[in-house]
Length: 335
Image (cartoon, rainbow, N blue to C red; front, side, top):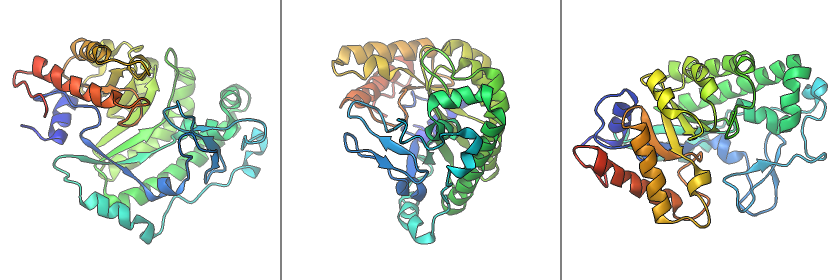
């Protein structure tokens, strides 16, 4: 039987996996010291201000923290004077801050798992965390020069973070967040994406690849079919969060071998207070049968191995085992 890592590699290259990859099972996600120092609120607790000066809250029924964007808390109120508003935190952490993370990484069996640091928010998310989403999207039209400057600033921050990560733990993979769309469309046009965001990610992901990272996993739980050529160009290996509103079979047929899709089981469909095992079974088997066994990793679309409602993620993983037993000759259920 293949290890979890080997099975994921076989799936990504369209080789001979012996079962479905179960969501995140091959990724040993690692929180970096910077991420741990960049305070985030506890679910249902009062908002907190992070190292970027962004105030975030974590509603009880939400999948993660969100920025608070009333008039008082928007960091960049005037984009023409953004430099006066933003204090860029130093992502390079002292040696002692890395000690516990390094111990965790040294205990990971790299033949079984990819060591994958968790980096969030991404370039676009960080820009609208600072500006507020409507102001950010408007700036693509009204203040493109200032927005380019902001993206250059965030990219330089990410490159310094990448240098520290690669030097300290030699990651095999990267798990990087940046939501680029809603359920039905990307937030910006492909032309704008090519101009503003593609150059940033070619530099960031290019750095990781040049320093030993084999697999770039990017999370965007959204529609993004119109951005897939740029995903390939920037060096993404796995698009995690690909929603069923994308034409997943078409993407796999056209880009399989260059890009693997991880998702297809939308949290909006299964991660509900009234979820049932029958619902989970039907949606998981639909995805596995419709999308196939090559270049596709069945997974919920949420950006970590969890769910809003207890038991949903675990039930999906069990149903993926059941789908493996049906769709693979070896019948590797429970692997």
